[in-house]
Amino acid sequence: MRRLVYCKVVLTTSLVWVLVDVVLLLYFSECNKCDDRKDRSLLPALRAAISRSQEGPGEMGKPVVIPKENQEKMKELFKINQFNLMASDMIALNRSLPDVRLDGCKAKVYPDDLPNTSIVIVFHNEAWSTLLRTIHSAINRSPRHLLLEILLVDDASDRDFLKDKLEHSVRTLEVPVRILRMEKRSGLIRARLRGAAATRGQVITFLDAHCECTMGWLEPLLARVKEDRRAVVCPIIDVVSDDTFEYMAGSDMTYGGFNWKLNFRWYPVPQREMDRRKGDRTLPVRTTGDWPKFGWTTSRTSSTSSPQIRNVETNQCLDNMGRKENEKVGFFNCHGMGGNQVFSYTADKEIRTDDLCLDVSRLNGPVVMLKCHLMKGNQAFEYDAERMTLLHVNSNQCLDMPLQEDKLSPTVRDCTGSRSQQWLLRNMTLGG
Image 1: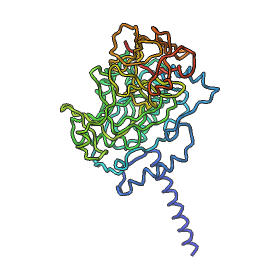
Image 2 (image 1 turned 120 degrees about the vertical axis):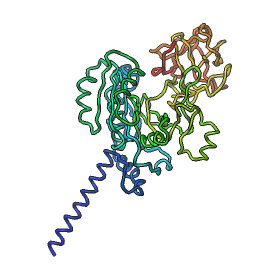
Image 3 (image 1 turned 45 degrees about the vertical axis):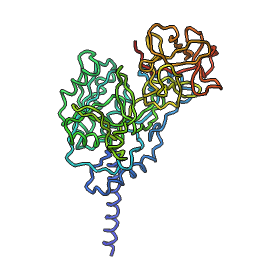
Image 4 (image 1 turned 90 degrees about the horizontal axis):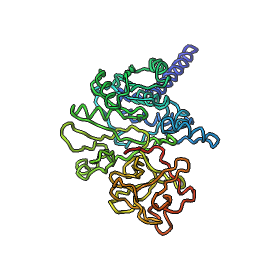
């Protein structure tokens, strides 16, 4: 009788430790290649339950709030990489993120014989925390049998921590990581080509050096390539705020593309694709072209937000609202996804969206969008980085939030230094 009780205790203890081991393996590897495919749907719920117990900065994609006493230091650090480095350094390298996929995407089962991939990441003086978080997220959220290797291509960085310290850090990771060093600064494309030439995987995947892969990101991409080796695919790109590092889910009803000025924009999924998909939003969006075939899938990664001009008082952004030439510029809640909120403050002191510039022809506005003429005049704005004001040169008035009678469009008014006249351009693209 005593022996039977002893056996029961041993058996129960063993089962408990087996369950603990399984939970830890799921949490740290996020492996989704399971023998029992019917149980796969339980994994996201299990991981989510584990993640909810984490209370560290930025966990589950929550924003990081910097205390007031550290704001000045935060602003200084921001200048190094043009994002909130203090917030990034507070976040764990393997932080948790929410699973925002459609239920249909979570339930999809992919073939066992998907091709493996080599990931190529190019960096130049990248921040330590963002680079390592990119690597860890790719490893932790990729099935091990599909991720053959990661190649880091250093485009002539001069920061010491990206030399021996980086070599030592990646040496201990569970996925082979190789570092290639460019002899001189060569640019993103040449560096990517160098990395691509050195890959050993069946598929090459390019990632930015400051992004995070989310759960289930890789399998849909590889599945499309397996269906057609000519396919060039891209995931839904969610947003990581450059200010708070908050994770914000993007829309699966848009796809990325370039206009004739080669500016990247988000476009709504065309009706022909809506009809072809017959309401199934888990199917990829196909864009035009036969060689190579290009498509946006329902896989997801996230990256730092696009350029924008944000008002300090309202925290809203300039937005062209899809309007045409000679119509008023608008504003809307900042979404960080580019599209209608991409504005460039150029070397000619223009505020440009595509080939349209903000133009003011009289005192107190209105502010309209006209073809950029490169002659300054009504289209010239001077940005004061300390006061954060945009001074319209001809009228000597500052860009301001709207008047009561026109609540949907910014205006210009006499400069007062008020918060409604302060604009953040800190992650703007400066172009000629």
